[in-house]
Structure formats: C-alpha cells, structure tokens
Image 1: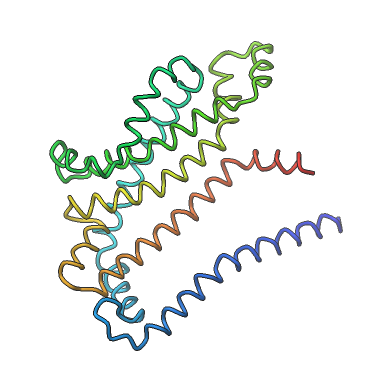
Image 2: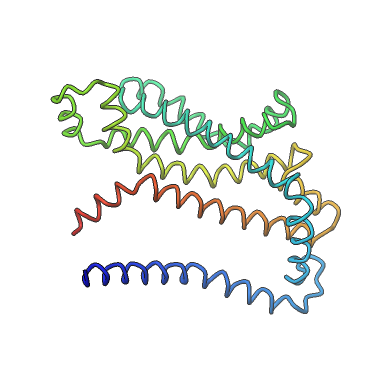
Amino acid sequence: MAFSATVRGRGLSHRLLSVLAEVALPVIAIALWWVLSANSTSLYFPPLSKIMAAFQRIWLFGHFDSDAVPSLENLAVGLLIATAVGVAVGMLLGLLPILSDAVLPTVEFLRAVPGVALLPAALLLLGIGPEMKISLIAYGTVWPVLLNTVDGVRGVDPVAVEVGASYRLRRPDRLFRIILPAASPQIVAGMRSALSIGITVIIFSEMVGSTDGIGFQILSAQRNFAVADMWAGIVMLGVLGYVLNIGFRGLENRLLRWHRGMRNSAGS
C-alpha cells in the first residue's frame, strides 16, 4: 500500500512538473511581450494590451461564431475524410506490396503538389463555398496518414500475423485485431502531422477564396490597416492551434494507452 501511494505520488508530481514546464515558457514570453511593447508607437507592432483588447472585442464576442466555428468545422470534416481515405488506402497498399509499387510513382507525384497550389483550380471547379475548403484540406492532409499507415502495416511483426493465422482467425479479424492495432501508433503520428498541415491549408484557402473564416478576417484587417485586429487574428490562430494540439494529445493518449502500457512493461 505504501509503495503504491509512493508511486502515485511520484506520478502526480511528474505530471505537475510537466504542466508547469509547458506553461512556464509561454507565460514568460507573453510577459516580456507585454512589457517590451507597452510604449510602442509603431503602426505595425502595437502594444500587446491593444492587441488583446482587439482579441476580446473580435474573437470572444464578435466573430467567433461567424468565422472561427466555420473554420473548425471545415477542418474537422476535411481531416475526417483524409483519415478515412488514408487509413483505407494505406492498409491496402501495405498489405499488397505489388499494388504499392505500381501506384508509388502516382502517389509521389500527387504528394509533391501542395494542396494550396490547387487553390485556383478548386476555386474554378467548386467556388468559394465550404466544399472547396474541405476538398483542399482532405487532399493536403491525406498523404501523411496514408504513408504512415503503409509503413505501420509493413512494420507489423509477421510472427503475430502468423499466430493469428494458426489460430484460424478470419482475415477481417486479423486485419482489425492484429494489423490495425499494431500499425495504430504510426497512423496516429500521421494524423498529428495532418492536423498542422490542415490548419495551414484552411487559413490560406480562407485568405484567397472566402467570405468568412479566420484567414479572411486576418487578411481583411491587413487590407483595412487595422493592425491590432490583424495581430488579434494571428493570436487567435495560435490559441486554436495550441488547444487543438492539446485535444489531440488527449485523444492520442486514450487511443494508444495499451501501446504505452506494453512499452512501459517491456522497459521494466
């Protein structure tokens, strides 16, 4: 009992120190920014107090529902499509090396074309609605999920697959109970990379072809020389990116809890 309490206490202390270490640098950076910019008279670098006043006015009360929410919805739908397609196609290519070799040149060609480069064509074909943004996000984010899935499937221990076959597990059971769980750490890593790419694509698409969204508001503020509003939009983008990353880390910890438990057991 005493040993268990000591272990729990150490775990709690470790988590507390991790949280403090993660929060300390942003707090110090914000404090320095606030102090150093307090007397700024530059048109392009207003005081942080002015930026935060604009942030409160625009993003906490004014434009969150009309601009931030549509951006997040388009990002979520695009990422879901990219994840579904990337995992399905990646599993297929990972299980069929001959097919993978056949389509590899096409995959590499398409992957080399950034999603933002297709924006003019997407505007012509789909207009400025959410379909255009979702399509660009799905296209730009599918590649890390797909390629990580292929690598994850190919890296599955063949002994585990053979054991499943020897126990006469059906192919679907082997796929969903052995191969997919074993490849899930790399799939989740691909999803994390896709998240950051998706944020970049959605902001760029809103700046060029949109009438709403965070990117549209940032560009509109810049064109109207509302510099504090522009910086407030950039701060909002950073805050959302950080919150999304925290949420994804929580999802990752939940999905890969078994994997970390096995790794800790092996290490001990």
